[in-house]
Each structure stands twice: as structure tokens, then as C-alpha cells.
Length: 572
Image (cartoon, rainbow, N blue to C red; front, side, top):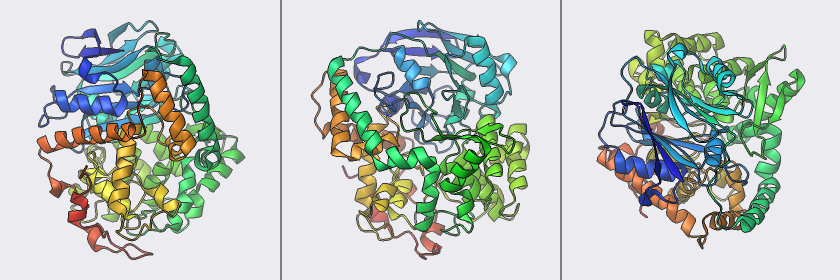
């Protein structure tokens, strides 16, 4: 258990034992608690006082399946709130194998200087000049870095958007094939990385100094039982391997909750063309891979490899949220265009969700026509070129809305909503409004409650409680390195029991079922405390006015959750 502390102003790298106050923490728990303790809440997110923290989950680097999620934390330049952005790929496992609890980047390199932070297979770390990589897209960059440092390396990097410090800039991570197609997309943390003078982090995957497991035999048994629970769950064992997250297009659209044409409709005409079923068919016909393994230790295989008509690789993975933001929101129903937009965003290094919503807002404002794929591609390309319009678009949907003085801008705390309209899923209205990190699809998505028919999505009753419970659960899961999708196994008695046993075997503890959510509550309290000190109040926990005033077809509902109910969400 060790911290790597990197001072970008002095170029010093120090290895430290994990301080007592951070012992046993990982992932979002570590990033949020440390940001709240050590970053001034009112600081400039792109200034030297902000920190960028990279932390694998506490189970990353172990044999437990689907635990290769890394948390990246900072004060967000997009929202001004605390932020944890979560990514898959291989880097969390690589850090776990080296016994690295977190990398903490402090201060800033002198203006114009750019660096790579490299960790070798022995855990020795160094800063290396990256001037030759300035302005490079993430695909060419990753290829060069893997050539230089070896294929058995994981890369975290930014593209031109991060270097330009645009507030929708992502941090891209490489998948098992070495492609930078996984993203810590939300909150503009790529801009924070750029502000530090950091182009890439390269971690050797061959480390053999993972933290000890207190009871290896018990852990092995629990890991086996948990893998069985993941395989037997219908969502992770059947739907996701067959269709990936794109399989969500049909059910969400059928619920009238698929925000379309900048959230003016809940059902997309021609949705069948961009459904998970259509995507799997196109990929198979062209010789791509519809059930691809993207992240280390994944047994779900929800990823895909989208290829063009000639069978050439375009992007991986074409996910539900991107299909929605670049497709449903913009009215584009062509997979080749959507895949090209996804590839562009990954290469330039911007969040596909905030960027797609920004394009949709521009179209809604009359700048371009809905459904114009060529115009959408040209708009996104401008971000990479650094044009004036590109800089506005690269700052996300809120910036574009302000530029066009448009009335319909679906953001909360400056961050775009996700692929579930809050008027047709009232519990997600609560999550969007109250999440400490702005409108967010992984912070407390209540869609599972609706798909299982446990809750009526159109009525206000029970929605606050459902959002609260899901936000607590996800704050807990994000500490462990476990994938959100694999966490569906925790909803079964077998999966929950096996996971708790794995945690206890890892740490030599005797935690009970209530101790996991207690961790989630602790994390949320820390995040809320940071935001309060940053100046956020209950008035910020609201959706844009149009969600309360414009009824969404086909159900013709508005958000029905009162301000008082919203304010009770975190009455722990």
C-alpha cells in the first residue's frame, strides 16, 4: 500500500506509505475523501491548488472478476463541484499489481511544458518530457507509447482537448488491445490533467508486488462464487454479452424515456436502426466482434468492435450512452456516422455525452439541422482544430447553450444529462438534480427498478428513496473497482454474500451487510461537504426549468418531484 506523490512544478516523485486516515480506502472513496481534505473547495479547478488523483479500487489487481475500474478525482472545471470520473480498460489492474493505492499529482508544470509519467514493472516512477507528443490525438499517442515502453503497458492520456483545457475534456484509457477507447469522460478531468502539464501516464502491467490478501483461500472461494453470480444474472450473463449496453435502446425507448431531438421527445422515430439488435447484426455482417473483452478480468464481454464496410476497425465500444447522445439527441440514425463521432471524441479526448448533447443543443438552436451527420462530424472536428466554435463546443452543452442563448439546455450543475429522460423516469430526475457531481448516469441510475417493475417511473411516489439507495450503493461500489454492470450481481443474495466474503477475506475484517452502504454514505457526505464549502446550496439541486414546464411525449409528463422532496434526498 503506497502513494506516489508527484509535484509537477519541481518534477519530484515521492513514494509514501498510505497515511492512517486513508487506510482501507480505494477508488472513489479515496479520491473524494482526499479531495475534500486536501483541495481548497473554492480553488480554480485549473489552478495549482487542485489535485488530480488516480486510484484503483480496493479489489483491483486481485483475481475477482470485473474489478478493473479506476477512479480519477479532482475539483471539476465543468461543474465546479467535487468529481470522480470512472474508467475501465487495464490501468486499474496494472496499478493493483504494483501495490499502488493512488497517484497524486500536485501543482503544475511551467507553462508550455508537457510530460509523461511512467511506472515500470518494479514500480519505479519517473517524469519524461513529452514535447514531441504535443497536440497528438490519443490513438497515435497510444500507439507511439506502446512502441516505446512495450505492449504490456497501460496508458492514461489526454488528446488536444485536454491540452486546450476544455471543460468537457476526457481522460482516455487503453483497453486490452492497447486502444484508447475507454474514458473517464465526465466532468472535464482531461482539462485538469492538461493544466498539470501531463500528457500521459504509462503503467507497466507486469508488476508482481500486489498488496497481500489476508485470507487467500477464502478470497479464492468467494471470487469463484461471485463470478458464478455474474454469469447467472440475466443482465450480465445473457443480455450484455449478446447486445452490449446498446441493448438498452429498445427498452428505454419503449418506456418513452429515450431523450430525442434535444429532449423534445421520449421516443425516437426509426430507433430500430440504432438498436442493440441492429448494431450486433451490422458488426457480425462486417466481420467485427459484437462480444469483445475490453477490460482486464472481464467475464461479461459487453464491449464490441465496430468496423466499417471494408471491415476496418473504427471504434470500441459503441456504448448505449454514446449511441443516444450522438444518435437520439441529434436525430442521426446511421451507425457509421455515430461510430465516426465516437472515434473522433476518443481521439480528440472529449466526453461523448456532453459533446453529443452540445451538438444537439446547437441543432435545436437552429445552427444546423437535426439528423445532419456530416454537420455533426464537422462540428466535432472543430474541437480538435482548436477553432473558436470548437472551443465553445469542447466546453460542453452548457457552454453551447449560453453561446446560442438557447432555452432548452439539459444540464445540471453544468453537466449534461444521460440517456434517460427525467420526466419519464422520475427517480433519475432526483439523481440528476441531487448527485454531488452534476447530472450523472452512473451515480444512481434507477432504470433497474423500472425494468423489474418494482417502481412506476411516471409517479413521484418512492422515487427519492430509490435514488437515495442507488446513489449510496454506487458510491460504495465505486470504492471497490467493481464494474457498474457486474454490480447487478450484488442484487442477488448469492452475489451479495460472495462479494462481502471477498471484501472480508481481502482485509481480514468482519464486515456485515450494513457496512458496505455505510461506506457509500460516508463518501457522499464528504462530497456534499466539499460542494457546500465550494458555495453550492439546495438551489443548485434542481433541473433546468423546461423539465418542469415542457411535457414530454408520449406520456406528456413533466418532472413531478417537489423541491422539498429533492432536498430530503440526503437525509441520512
